[in-house]
Image (cartoon, rainbow, N blue to C red; front, top):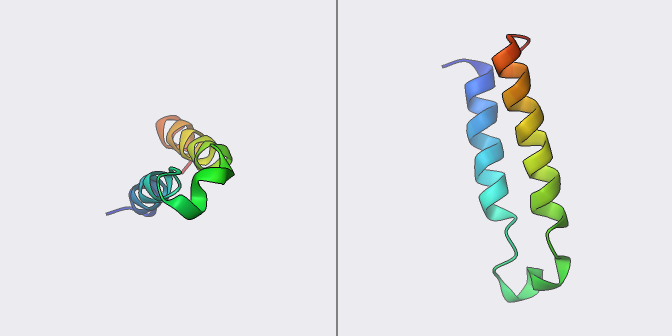
Length: 52
């Protein structure tokens, strides 16, 4: 397993964990999941370009 694949799995898990479904995180909006989603998108693009 490459480092990029492990990072991809970790970011997907963080994205799922950032979805505001718990009562204490409903006031956060979609900012945490949006930020992690952006990091995930950048990571996927870098992996497709062969730079990671």
